[in-house]
Image: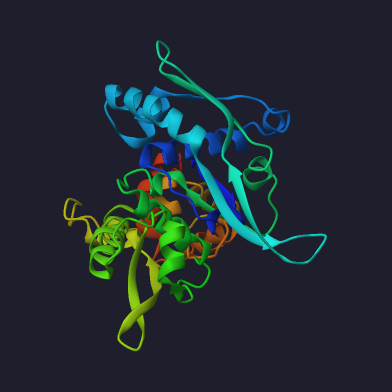
Length: 318
């Protein structure tokens, strides 16, 4: 089952500096908060266990304990910033918001308990149109805090696959690069941008590249273009070297009811979810799969997954 990280766009666009362990705890807490909305509305306390951290981010047990312990103080001190319009005056306002109201680490239990601040709760639980959502597994293997933040920024633009020009100073703030870090552009490009892009391209469901924009001879902004990886091609039986080449690929005449049922199940599979076209909902992805299941040239790629889901092709009469 997919674990969706959902944030209001104010939070995605905000400026903050969090290390990888702190961001990962926030991810796990957001998933838990979305699953327990009533509890969070009542200022409930969320528990993040080292075992969950270990399983989600594929680290050793001792590393999970260490990450939870080290991130506790960092999260208590951390805040994020975003700009909006002051309701009464209509003037620009710069907001400074703390992530947690309280947090503690229970050493013997390998567990963190935290309580989000009142300002954070509506940004992760009560969302309407202005939000960004992605599967937690897509950032689970990212080892750079800059890569995590850059991926989130890309997801805010996933419906179009490209960003506007982002001023370098603004991008530094959004990625959490401190003023004293990587002041020279060559260092910023090498240690932050190119490193983050490389990790995203290797470990997530998108490939991204960036373009530099200059004012005179000085790089003053960058923009990003990205697209979904086409993973479905790799599960096409026609390209499977281990398949029995003496057996022809068969097309199964599925009933309308079967297509409707199994297309919905396929669209919900984590291993296929990353192939949904950018900007499409799960229901829209299911509709695309339904068309593929009725297409003799496309159905075969789904057969391994259909079998796992319990689909049994009708046997030919002898």
